[in-house]
Length: 70
Image (cartoon, rainbow, N blue to C red; front, side):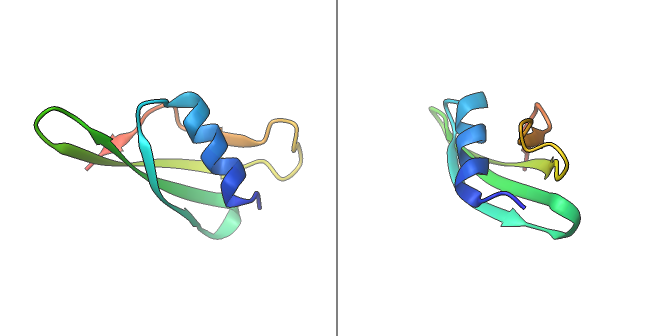
């Protein structure tokens, strides 16, 4: 499984305007990243799901391209 800082770097590269709250690692190479975004009226909180590729570390992190807002 990849280190949390590698996952954080990939999230920051794809989404520049969000802040990372927490990274959780689940079994079978699946992870979740809890993020927040400050808007004019409120703070939005969301989750990004992803998985790591154990065979090819060149690819690194495979994430969904969207944030599921709660």
